[in-house]
Length: 73
Image (cartoon, rainbow, N blue to C red; front, side, top):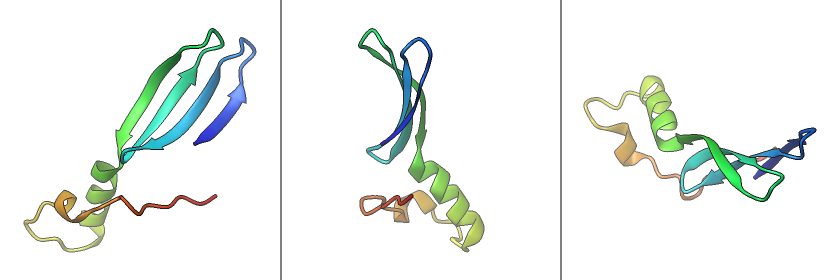
């Protein structure tokens, strides 16, 4: 999770990794949240891996597991 700066109206954006997805949330000052963006990391990473490595006719998504994904600053 990564917190963005607080806006003048009190809202704050938060980036999160959840269930193999990267999400951008807008946390409203009033106490509710709004999902702004959501991308499936398996889709993004498998496409790039298929470009980099020869996977032949196989679906590269079948061989990609993100359960041990670690993100460092």
